[in-house]
Image 1 (tube, protein in one colour):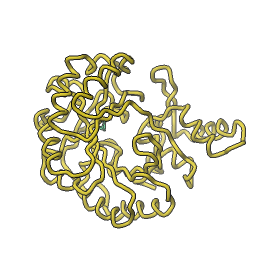
Image 2 (image 1 turned 90 degrees about the horizontal axis):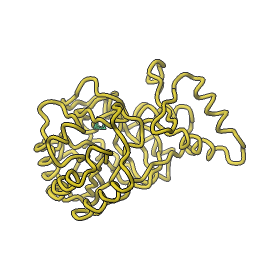
Image 3 (image 1 turned 60 degrees about the vertical axis):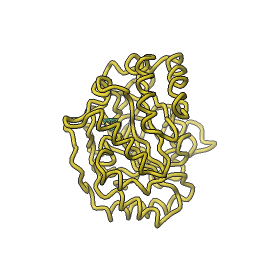
Length: 319
Ligand code: SF4
């Protein structure tokens, strides 16, 4: 499948089917922690990058093959709301299934009324808000020129006024960057203006394009929870897990997920082992075969091996 990946399992969204509407990497930001690597060329113009009917056909097929989904999640190779027509797709998906629809977005285009309008029928929207000041926004999110911090916050606040669904703000907590008391108090003040249903605190657990991206200490995570909890309910950091048991083609499913974000080797090993209960060491043989395709390579992050796509392979064409 070209646009569908997963299902991936996470504590936040349970069994979630991913829908990626963008050519890699298409983004209006260039976050220091981005798991997709650096933004080589900013994209701020919304387009229907792929025919919407084609995407819908794949969603239809995936729904027929997976009947235990908790969410259908629009997320992927950049900023989701750059896809013009996502509102139509959400509407069509809702005619096909009662499975709720989530959209993960950096929120940078929410200042546009037409973007907010397209999101109104989603069941949950998860925009990013990593900074409480323009200076930290520039340091962390590194937006395209013409996108300001004020615009970002005003867009989020305007969306909240219009949107009846669940607004879950995602905060990426970065050690030594936005985890000081001062930065957290500023962030809490801005989050208050956007009045979310929840704040999801996430951590840079995957390889990032910049060297100075680090996990915060336990003490800083606790402090972030304490400070942000004064303005919204905060969900503790959680890590997703992969579930490949319903994948019709395991290599394709893994390629599809790894091309969208690095996957910890341990997580992949467990997901493959779950597909072969009682077969000792089968997962290692399967992983060796996968590595032999040349589609993947291993990189290290915080002492842990991760699988990433091998840029020199031509796997993108097969995803
Ligand atoms: S908004 Fe998302 S895709 Fe874009 S640079 Fe930031 S982390 Fe990467």
